[in-house]
Length: 145
Image (cartoon, rainbow, N blue to C red; front, side, top):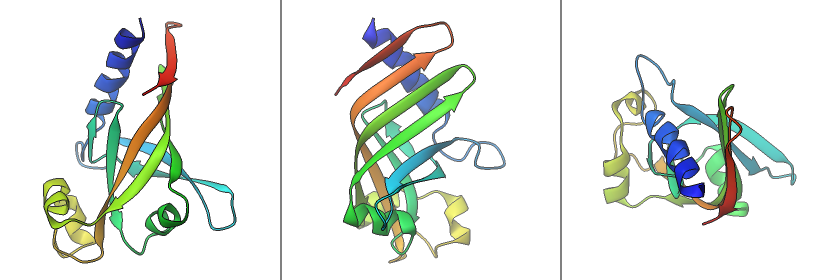
C-alpha cells in the first residue's frame, strides 16, 4: 500500500520539477531553522528530484537558505494542493561542485548568475529521512526512508 501512495507522490513531484511554462509554477515550500532558532519557510522551484528520496533547488551561496543550512542542516519540504499534501523531513547540503552545478543549471537563472560557473551559484540538495503523504481520497502513508 505505501509503495502505491509513494508512487503517486513521486509523480506529483516529477510534474513540478523544473521551470514549467512561462514562470515558476512548479514550486514547493522549504522550511529551515533561522539564525534565531525559529522555523522559516520559503517557496522554491524544484530543479530535479529522485522521487521522494532527494530534491534539489538552485540558489546563491550568499542567500539566507545557504547560510542557514550551514548552521543547521535539518529541514522540511511541503508540496500541497487541495488534492494532496506531501511533507518530507530530512537534511540539506549546499553543493558547489562544478559538474553538479553544470548538470543542474537552468536558463532562467541567467538573470541572477553569469552561468553555471558563477562562484555564487550553488545547488541545495534535500535528502529525505521520513515522509508523510495524504491524498483527498483518504489514502495516506508515513514512514522512514
